[in-house]
Length: 426
Image (tube, rainbow, N blue to C red; front, side, top):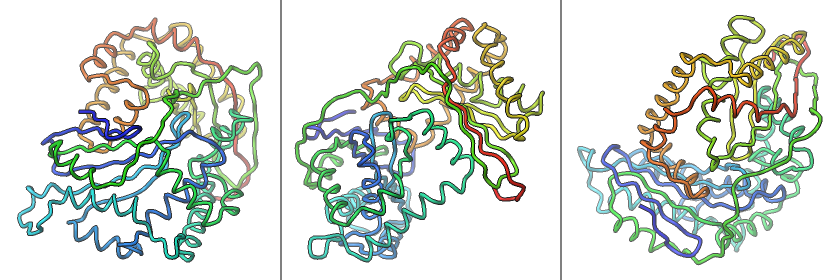
């Protein structure tokens, strides 16, 4: 059930008795720009930890405990050409509680919590609380730096910088960068907050055993305003480069991290989208894949090797852990697996197994309220809603020739290897 609440504000409601919880999600969606990413990430941290009603994390934790162990969080997400600040809250459906004495049902209390966080932040003297702001800026700085302690993440970020040279918003982490963070003032972030409330597209989603009237009544108390939202494409489209970009760095790792980036110009709204999903699963996106079987198992050239496909940026990445001296050999054998699919060398048995694993994963996702909520934003941004039965038919119809056609569109664009050092520090 899809509703327009105001101009630029929508509600998706999935009424179901499948779950014993009620999940709520509010997405604030803005164009992805390098200048705004860091400020929006810091804003998310500040909002999550300082509300007028719950000025400290301890106060918020107590309220969540009073709500029978409700969960709450704010995160940031990059999605193609969009940046998303996402608030989530999940409460128990009180009909499943043996004792529930509150006058107000938990869903309404959860929506009231989201309202308080969004519209009633801690603003002494009209500014974010200085101590809270300083602490959260330091926490975000620590979080950004700690990401680089994950050497696979670091290798992938450096790969993205090679792939998207000149496009810092696409290369940057959703948390932003430390240089910009150090320059941000509380006034800057307050401006970002007011801009978000006034201009971002807002997508509210609820899943659980609640009626439209209850959701609409809860939202009616929120001070939401009309906003002008340009319905531009969420897809980041880019041109193939003539030369492969390559880079490497030394780091104290025992296991080298070799990452490869490919252009795969098939987007979520393309007719070949489902074949592209199957291609990725057959290439390296599942334990049945050629990378797992031939690079990791048979050739024993990698501790792990897998691929991932992003239908919002038209990219595919390969992540592998190797011995540094085998780098050229690994790149060659990975290239051989791609070439095999480009030549149509995919057994019908493997194709059937890959399709079965994708179907199982999709069906398993139906048991996750969070997966359902996240899927609703994708549908909203892409204007694509596809019933499970339709997707199943498309999946069943994918042939070896379809996978081959997608594979032939794939081109290697960048390679990056993080290697060297003899310390046991991964």
